[in-house]
Length: 192
Image 1: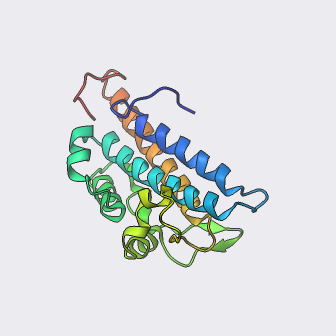
Image 2: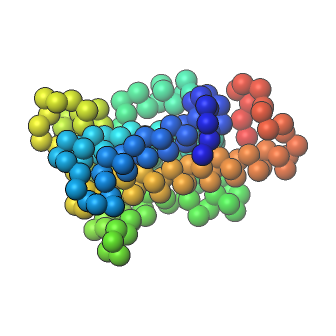
């Protein structure tokens, strides 16, 4: 696991997403499956935040600056953000990126059962429910009811998969940069 990365350094977004989703996993108590209602609610918020950071990590690895990412995605619209990341990946002709060209069409398998829909379709459905479905609402005590999937760990699994995609994209970009002879720690603003 990466340590002490900032969002404006390679790995910063992915590291933060990993940490958030690890906290979400612990809150869910997947081993015993006896998480409290409040723990489930907080876990969903953490995993949704992890999805956002992983999506931003893909965009950052592919050349967008943190300022561009903030400006273009200030509304925190996850379906829109993930579509932008997917489109950015599809613009890359290199072989290694092709397996991720349609990452939002992936469906998780939980306890041997395939989830009823894709990541893209679920997130679109999820956020169509309004303000109570927004990531930050999961951390407020005045939102007694929350929106979540069945099984509850589906969002955590989606976040975990997207974090893997973001880490692989980051690694591919670093590999391409190394093959082109660019230094590993390129100056600020210099992207592959």
